[in-house]
Length: 283
Image 1: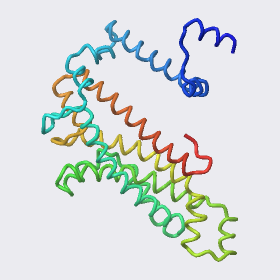
Image 2 (image 1 turned 180 degrees about the vertical axis):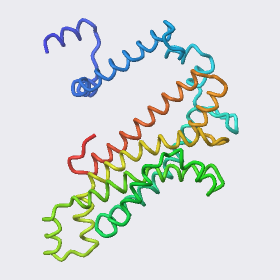
Image 3 (image 1 turned 135 degrees about the vertical axis):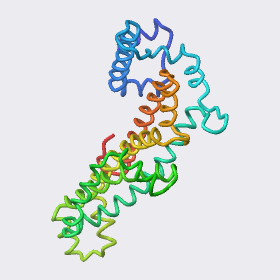
Image 4 (image 1 turned 90 degrees about the vertical axis):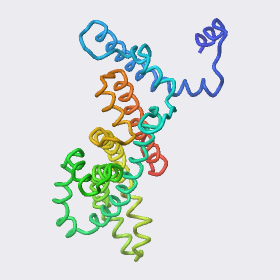
């Protein structure tokens, strides 16, 4: 404490109280990932500069004029497919939101139904396990043939990719409800509505959120892959494919950074909801 006070006096700088408190609590969580990220970037830049890899280093994101403009002007919109990375990413997120929402509704509903009915579970579980093994890209041509349009086809690919972890985890959560809880419900003669609201959903929520968290990552991966295959739609996946065709490698790297950052935020967002809703939920 004395050393910290001496250091503050010597530098003439002191963080505001709330920032100081935040830093003291979170420094151990912030410093290691920052050091790890900077080390990775340094190794990448050295490998690029020495010719070990043909990929441009992270510095090229600023030195390359096209990439620098994309960094400085993410909100530009010249019409058609010529849009900044903000709009490209937002278009992809819009499709993910639609497909993921439908997957959550269907997955939780069917998961509860299957989890509470042993016969139905035996009948449908092999089908669910079979369908969830199909790669997202394999659904793209089927969706395009069935729906005839890129937008609904992309949303369907997200749905069919994201629904299985939600459904399977929800069903497992329902099956793992302790027998004591079910016995109490029988003794109290709870209605189906009261049983679902007071026993089933609270007990199964940790499993449901595990499925939701896995599914949001899969949904984000699926839309990127689908947009790369589909042509003529605004989206971060199409942006990557277009940059590849024109050999703009730095733009591809920048788009990959966007994808990773957005995916991390989506995962943390669902984890934060879990922490708020589920007792003892962890971030």
